[in-house]
Image (cartoon, rainbow, N blue to C red; front, side, top):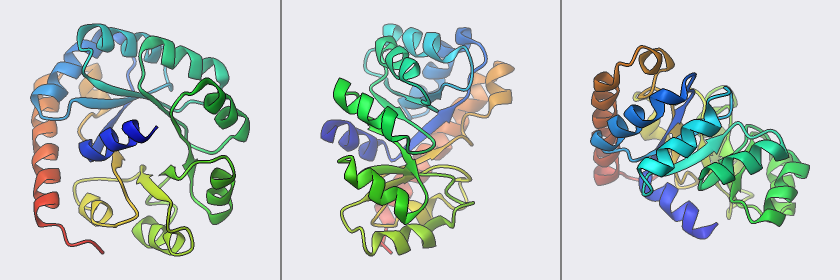
Length: 217
């Protein structure tokens, strides 16, 4: 898990992808790679997720890919068997977390309250997803929760965009952000991969600029 978190942290921003057609997986991965973001979280919100992950890993073994919206044990197994490096869930389901821990699947469950943070700690987890980030109080909520839980780090997702991502990435309790602005579902469905590449380049540059000038809050 430590290696996975280190890689996620080095990426900084993880594109969160909803894909309706697995045939779009390879051109999407190519666009992200060319744009400087060789990573993605493919959400299990569609039937295409498992096949999309499998296609990307077969074509680009070094592409860092996770599976999101993992709600069941079957989804966790399918994602890992397809080649996912880590799993992400929108909430914290102790049964799913325990199952993944027993299987040694790296899992990052979502939390948005102190009680959920404590539940995660009781399961041995300190690296969590903060979801839905903006709706749940944003950076101020993360800072408030990190005061009593100093060892906990968050990956905020939900409502993150180019205008507010700097505020999140310069928070010491944040190790990365998840976002979908560079991989709009309509652009994927309409095969506008050159536009996605440009959005990825802008995002990569933005992240590098933030890291080069960051003063942690």
